[in-house]
Amino acid sequence: MPTTTQYELRLAGRMSRLGTETAFEVLNRARALEKQGKEIIHLEIGEPDFDTPSNVIEAGVNALHKGWTHYGPAAGLPELRQTIADYVSRTRNVPVSSDEVVVVPGGKPIIFFTILALIEQGDEVIYPNPGFPIYESMINYSLGKAVPIHLREERDFSVDVKELASLITDRTRLIILNSPHNPTGGVLTKKDILEIAEAIGDRNIMILSDEIYSRLIFEGEDFSIMSVPGFKERTILLDGFSKTYAMTGWRMGYGVMRPDLATHVARLNTNSISCTASFTQIAGIEALRGDQSSVDKMNAEFKRRRDVFVAGLNKIKGFSCRLPKGAFYAFPNITKTGWPSRKLADALLEEAGVACLSGTAFGAFGEGYLRFSVANSLENLNGALARIEDWAAKNLR
Image (cartoon, rainbow, N blue to C red; front, side, top):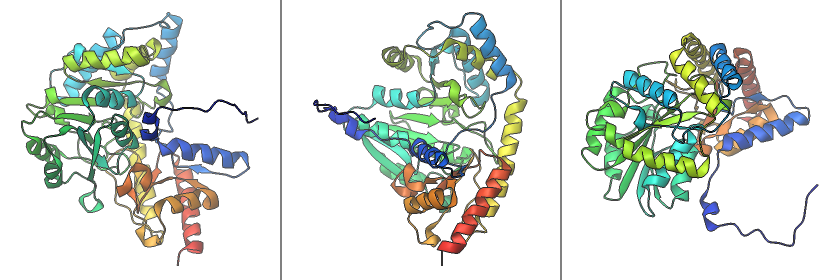
C-alpha cells in the first residue's frame, strides 16, 4: 500500500549527480513481466550462470562452522591479502606486498573509493565511453569533470592513443582503463598498453585499471599497465572474484595500490562498510590457491557461446556484431535497423521476450548498439536469436 506523509523529503543536492546501473532496472522490469506470465530470456545481467566452484563453497561453509563470522581488519584478512599479493605478483610480473592490497565487498567500492580519495571539484577524469556506467556516475558525484574517450567499433573498441593524448590536460588526475571491456568485449593488447603508457609519460596521473574480467579472455593475453616499468606506483588495480569464480553474490573484490593510498582506501572502508565478510574471504583464499579447472571450463564455454551468438546476430536483418575478444558480452551495431537503442531494447523485452541493454546505458557513445550477455545456456541463446530474428522480420523493412 502506498503511504503518504506531510513531511517533504529534502535530499542533498549531491544525489541528483548519482547515476545507476541499468542492468538491474531491466532485470526488475523483466521479472515483473514474468510475474504477468510472460516468458523472458535473460541476457541483460552481467553475471556468470555457473555455480561457484564446489571447493570454494566448501571453504566458505567450513569457515562459517569454524567461527569466521566476526569483524575482520578493514583492509581484509592478512592471509587473503597475502594470497592476493602473491597472485598479482605472479600474474602481473611485479612485486606486490600485502600492505598494497585492500579487500572490499565487490568491485564497485574500489571505483568509488579511488575517486573519493583522489578527485577534487573540477579535477578531470578520463574514462571509456561506452563503458561501465559507475565510472561516470562516481566522477559526477564527486564533482569531478568526466572526460569521455570514445571507444570506436572500427578500432575494435580499443583506445585511440592519439585521442587519449589530446584529452590529457594539467587538470587530469585519473585515467580509467578497462580490459577486457564491459560492454564491448574489447581487449587492450600489450602494444596498446605500452602506447598508452608512453602517452601518459612521467606525468603525475593515476590510472585505475579495471581488470575484473582479466581471466575471461578468448584471444590474446591479459597485460596490465601495472606491469609497465614506472607505472606500478601510479596504478590502482581493480580485480575480484565475482566474474572469474562465479561469486557475484559473495560480494568480494580487491584493489592493489601503493601503500600510502591503500591506507586511505582502507579508512574509507572503515567509514562505510567496516570490513568485508570474514567467511567469504576464507573462501577467496581457496578460490585463488585451489583448483583452477572450473575457471578454464567456464572460459571455454563462454567462448563457445560467444561464437554461436555472434554468428547468429550477424544473420539478423539490421544487426552486425564484431567478435568480442574477452568478457561475456556481445555488443552489436543496430544502426541499420533505424531504431534508437533504448526503443529497440524496450521492444525486444516487451514484444520478443528478450532482455538486453541499450548501448546508451553505458554512455552517450553507446547509441546505435545493444549489449547482450552470453552468460546463459546455448539453448536459451539460440532461443533468443530466434525471437529477435522473428521480431526483426515483422518490424523492420
